[in-house]
Length: 331
Ligand code: PMV
Image (cartoon, rainbow, N blue to C red):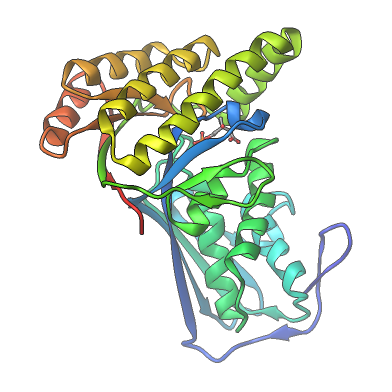
């Protein structure tokens, strides 16, 4: 198989590897700690991997002569050729073949599984792309640099989100806390003292594309006002980075609360998110905020390790559909 200039798959000579050849790879979820939305407008953001949830891809040789995709989580089993070239799963495979200048179609099955909730701000799309890129390149006997994986995954993020900042694919690829500014080299964020975050899911699916688009309209109508709001977020993110480096969780909690207030102004919070944020603070959180695109999806609360289980319980009592307790540390 080959790819022509318009991204369409051409039928070339088939490569049938000897069964039971198989490769597998996985990638973690992620959560944004600070700076979502403002990051789209060039301000910094902080995000960390969430290793409790993962996407994995397994590529195994078959004798069909084609590429089969199995993604039971989204009820999808089909041949690659049946998907539109801009379907995110097809695009990741086609993008990889094009980057690696693959001339012969492998005969294989790509099995994708993920425990990362979809459309919840946990980086599910990026993690699936990264897992496929790694498993399929290994299957083809090629090594892709982290930088290349990140770049290819970013192209797919554009299909998911329209105009993404690139933060999701970066955290998921490097699987470490990052200080991110759109278009600049990714900087790691050193964590002075490990700290605990509880993630609470409203259970309301929300498309990042929509909240980003709605804010863009507001920004278009009152650009200088929103630029000032984004500047305030930028100040919070820089302070948060310093607090994380110093291990100052009390200060970090206050910064989360301030960031949430600015996200409310941006109209990307929701009744459900606000209820969980307030419940978290009442249950002893040092600070809490929505995380990601907002209007649904997840919120996060910073809490001492000892109080994390009771805080998670309080969030579920307040309506959270699921909670994840995760530790943020340098790795
Ligand atoms: O909803 P998530 O976690 O994929 O995050 C989106 C973050 C935004 O800043 C709202 C958009 C972006 O591309 O950075």
